[in-house]
Length: 173
Image (cartoon, rainbow, N blue to C red; front, side):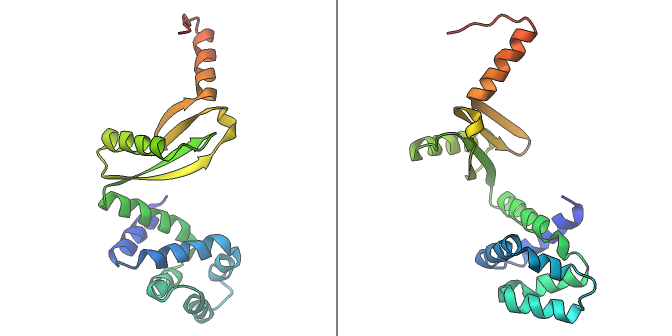
């Protein structure tokens, strides 16, 4: 992510635009790729692009998007929205993490994972993205930032193979 995207994300946060409008904008951008094609096309006049922005995006974010378009930065919108969420979470002491699993954890297990992450990182809350990953064979992996906690069967098998290659003693308890 570029410094420009991060700066736009911070500005978007500081504008205090309703999160529903921001989430709706992200959904439009993600689900209708033609919108990005039109808004980034230099052969389409700025007036037409502004008109499209006004017609399809929530009113609260229209001026911000027009300014991005004017500055030829609209192609960065996905990164800007990601930077917005990262900055929002930092300001609100929310940790973003992903949980990769084979079998979806029960609510109690999920709560224990969130409590573990809050203690580990001093966060007030965890925003946990759930990702089904059958290739793990069993168990789960938690990723947050550049850290990974691997409690998967696949990870344990890789660790065992690595230890055996190095000639380390392997104990089975």
